[in-house]
Image (cartoon, rainbow, N blue to C red):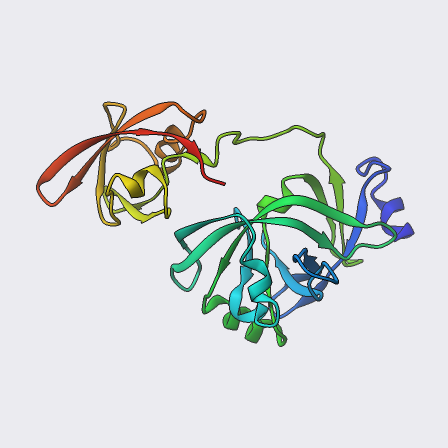
Length: 259
């Protein structure tokens, strides 16, 4: 690691932590990580995770966690969601992992409260076949956003430099009404409703088409813009107009923190 740090001097801070990775298959980067579970030894066995900077969340494949899957059920979670993958959408719960730790060199690298999509997906088998060994999940943005990442490919090491504390690009990400949306052609539709959320209690269903948010038509807005407009401080209201068949209805919903 000393040669890598010397090569990257001027880029890395003294607090940067080296995380070794393996390159397998078509160039996928694999690291080892583990998650906290509520019974001794307090952490899962070491898991193989594919680094995926394009994944907004870390992912854990339920079928690959069979030996301790039951221990993950007490994690706080949003249930009833859909997770899009390269091999199609899968039912998922978005869980708050108490601790996620990476195997690093010379220093423990652990983050508290990491969001992860826990799901059953054919992607697990696809990735496992691609690299020639079991893959338990993805290391995504919900972990990596806490660091500035520098990758030294020749030496197979990823340096993670902690970001200053308190930085959050979406402070109200989990303070909303519980709708998961998707753009299907010209229409913006509900693809999932979080169990027990304000939207669920109001009777909103997957397949409903979003027409307007707070009286503004969504036809000219992109998906991310609409999604973020549904977020906001807990206790505030938002009005969303939906179309089901030929019937339009406006719902006045109160945002609350769901995770």
